[in-house]
Length: 288
Image (cartoon, rainbow, N blue to C red; front, side, top):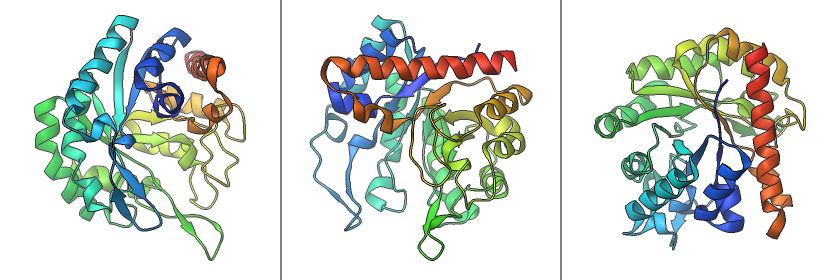
């Protein structure tokens, strides 16, 4: 049966990263996703980075990553992957990506998810990824890029962005063409109305390039990042596609909005619900 993981950012916002890892292990997950978005504080209204006091932004970042790895090890779980900050088109953020890869290795992760620049072609995005590959190989960490989406004010719906279609995603894979550059399929993004694709189509087309997932649910109109099985995505078809294509990576949840309803002593309940949903999907894939 496939192993399960979850991003910890939404949990850490309630209890801190150290406690979040403990709760993830207690809830039954096999691994944790090192969410490094707190490394920068991006102001979307001015498109610039603001001062950030998080441990990941300072000189103690690597010590912090090692501490999280140690806590996870004591709890019997591992870091399977990480997520670098975004948007990639912000130079100050893109300049953190070497550090993100190194921090991923420090925490024990094997894949670092780095967004493409939504507005650039496969060849243009490849320039950045190719610059990062020597660092990734030296750390033993694969770079995974992700299917994105933009917003059309004219049509009031999601619209094309880098990797948002199977054709664009495969163009990105071909432009880099390296075993250390793989695909992370965001299930929710793939199901957004207006992108003219689906998670199943993406899984079938990506084939062996697909080595990581971001799993969450939505109403197909907005990127809601809800817990699986709570909205409109057909996870039965997703499970069959993953089984059909021999996917053997982790099922990593990115159901960020789910934890917003949980505080105090109830935080663990929210994490347990996430774990239960991930295990349900793992069982569906096993039985497909």
